[in-house]
Image (cartoon, rainbow, N blue to C red; front, side):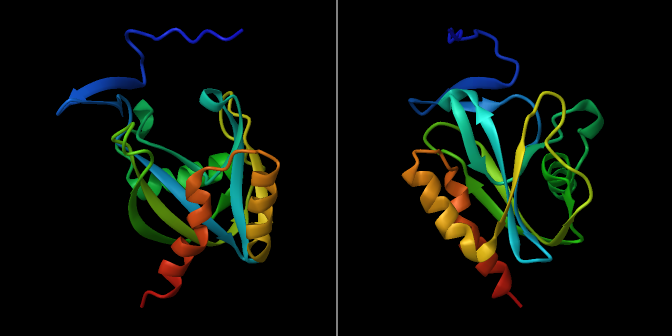
Length: 177
């Protein structure tokens, strides 16, 4: 049985009250990045990892915190995105576009995720995360992504909402000058 007792002094999150509203804020790092990744073979890179709050694996964009470790405290959002993509997936890219920020759950947290698009990505190592992360990498042909997502939903497997916006985010970069 898991221990779900609240921690009065959690090291990573803080409960804030403002204007009669309670929400969480992060106590480490200077931001969050998410990466829409397209390979040279027109494949989308996704990650799957166990998420304790929902009690099972979730299919997600590669993502992570900016500057949450002492040796990374001065990293830029782009540097964090490049680091997270390689750590989690083993892929790297030299073609990066910053799209802007999206909220992760505006009624629950002040967290905003800076979305990057990485194009022409290629695999340099296996990925899988760092430390105790056990990240599974999914390489999905772009034209098959809708079917893959529909199958996961039909099977009752959770998918992070940002994954459903991949085509819209790629479209933003394809239509820009």
